Image (cartoon, rainbow, N blue to C red):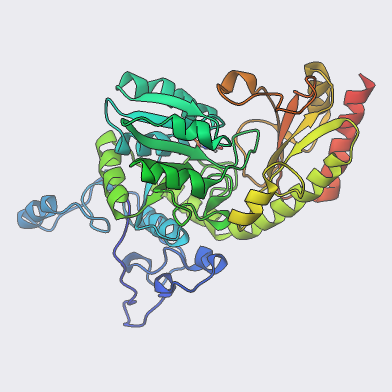
Length: 419
Ligand SMILES: *Cc1c(COP(=O)(O)O)cnc(C)c1O
């Protein structure tokens, strides 16, 4: 599943949606027009859900001819996708400046590991940012290690240590911005440039900002991975991942993914396309609410730190402002000198915030988390903080009214301080 050759001519000869070819369109418009210019979407707004394992051939000659081509946009067998998946790939490719194609994966983790397996082989060394999503760390320490790939974790804010971590076998860098749970904003252009100079491939987990908020390939990365489970799905009912890249890495990822037998269902692809159309306004709304909540939290005496790159004065804000065109509703805050029991009283008292993993849906979530077990290089509490300022909560802000969310948090803090 991947790239699809475009034919913008409708059956009646009229060009229906040609917008995908226009480089000047803004991302907001691309969210609407993306993936709608192909042969298969004529005369309906959304591509139909093509449920198919088997594609039928006209005759034996057509069957034999089919084996000779392995191209996107040509039916072969269900595992290589059908128009619903191809339309989603095309829409995601159009959103990512510099991308030649996009490969879909059954989850965000599958996209991360699938990309790493496309790039690496036994004997290679992988550098992993120390603040990566925990399952990314686990994959480096688990399956990749078992298949002969070594890894080293690095602090993405310490460029000297990062450069020193390279050796001649270093072939790939796994980046993520902002850092998982702790929201450090590293200098992606600088880290990717160093990797390129040393002949290593940069892979970026861009799930937080999406292509709307950060153009990963234009900032020097070679492969950009997104967990579509989060903002693209947007409704907490879908698991999927994607990786976009220029032609060379796109072809390698597509081949590797076919060999691993990855496939996503057409029903899920249709849901992802539906989510994608409204992602822009959802991100705008949740970012605005998150910023209001971050400011409200910052003013509280029982909050020691607010880790939200969009918040002026917060760690990483300047780099975020330099490189990003948007943010999202996911951020953390650290309680001032409280313990885990106090933190649990706060979270348990919340009525609008669900308690759960994942994020990027229309509903708000709160997650108490422990950083210490999932860092090898970066200190927690952070340098300069009080030693007791360690108990943190991550919030994923949804589409509720901001005042209702603040009232809910008031209730949580009251419960915490009564205990
Ligand atoms: C959730 C998430 C993933 C993994 O996505 P799944 O679809 O849950 O496998 C990867 N990276 C980040 C930053 C995430 O938040």
